Image (tube, rainbow, N blue to C red; front, side, top):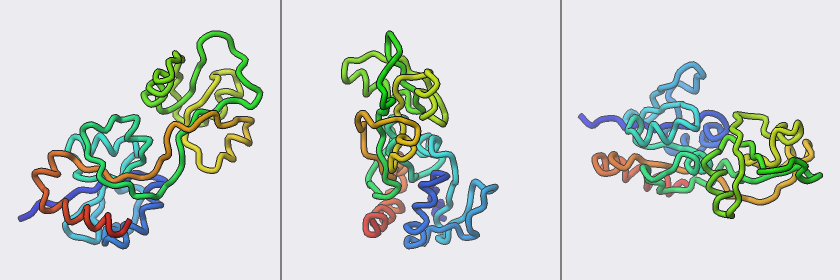
Length: 207
């Protein structure tokens, strides 16, 4: 008997944006989405779904708890994607990862502080420019950090930019455009190639 494939899905916006694609592929949850259930059967009897935090998707796929995953490029950049195949840009959940600062300019003295939930990406970005910064990890409400003097810059995802403008911030530069990506466990790609390859082709056809 062939083992089922497991597809890890990111909770939140990416899950919402992927519903149409999953439906076309016959991978929508068989019983509908339920916030309390983290493992669900899909409408394809050979594929089960995991509904987990976006930051956990690469880890589940890397360690083989899931064979495939759908996750934002920002999460992959922070995680470090060497242990994963990233065969396909799915093209939805578009936004950008940016550096932003107060419109009035920097006021603090000394090494700049940057507030972000992407410390590794932020460190690499500023190091690549030869600039040393102090990184403060936050989990939300990044725009508040410069307003109360906690940080000089933020690194965060931006869609329209309205939230930045509403809080007196401006985009300084774009680090990377972000979209949802399909990722695959490297070992599963070898061991379950006959199962995974057709799914990759179907994803490509739909995208």
